Length: 182
Image (cartoon, rainbow, N blue to C red; front, top):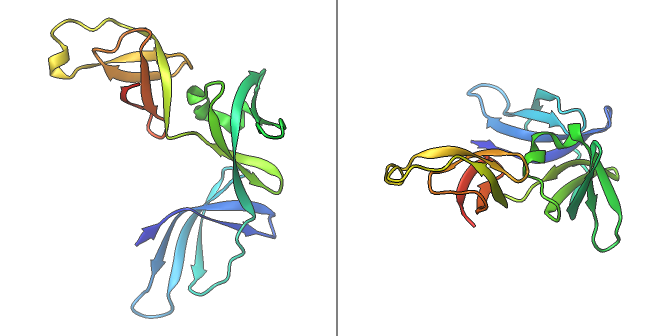
């Protein structure tokens, strides 16, 4: 049975790793073991590692806090704690492809390790406005056709033919797919 998402800290390399997948294996002969795929949160590197069953692993001191994305300052994205007004800055490289779903005023979950931000999570669905789309042809809507639309964040999403400029839509940030009209 495959399971996912537990975090541990490897003290020798002083980095936090997320188990992206792990599988408990009990061979017919010999001791059981756990085979894992780990991703280093700081560097992004992936490695496969095998642990003996019953091994003790130190859990990383990682916590999540909700912060609001406020604005982009050059090559940095600024998030703010609304209770203390403290700012947290992430570089474009840290944000990556998630930037196409970020909208000012959006609440995001920042992941902290050793007092520093190592990752962030977007809401599962975001409400965005269509700024550019080809007009749908009358009569094509019954066939369930689709067309590309450019959203106010610059993201391109495939939408049904009945969606027009100025309409707000809901998009799944995990897959980048149109969900429904807002």
